[in-house]
Image (cartoon, rainbow, N blue to C red; front, side):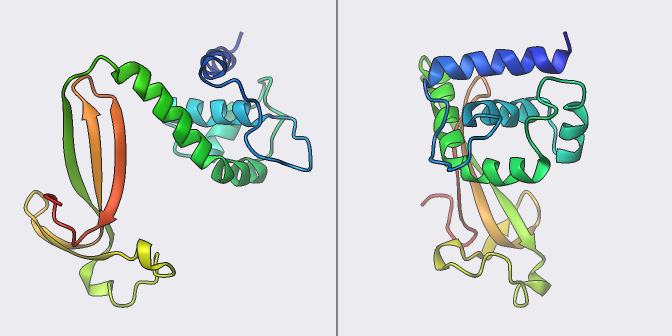
Length: 174
């Protein structure tokens, strides 16, 4: 058995224990790959540290999933399933963090562009709530930055409990 298939089936079985749903939202067309199977594929790609979809679909060749989904359909459905994926991941982390008493909270800058280009940048300026701002001085990187701050809560064992983005101008204390 191909290692890819074995890992995929293991992830799918674990997800079926967490949730009993196959489909998460209404689709007028019946897909060959159910929503839970697609989420399993997304988690498998993350597990294998596959940043490239091209690499993922190269690995799908000669597996049971080869003809079940196209790359463009994968992208579109993956974006629609993001809220459900977050919910499943939260359930998974609750199970592994339920006996943890201590957590580590940290933040890091996420630079959208250099300060010199910040006035011309059009990234994420459509919605007011997603508007990035000039950040305070970041001592660890020795710079002022333009973008966001990533805040993460992690257990002592290294399992992420949650994460959030805030404007760069928001101080860590708040």
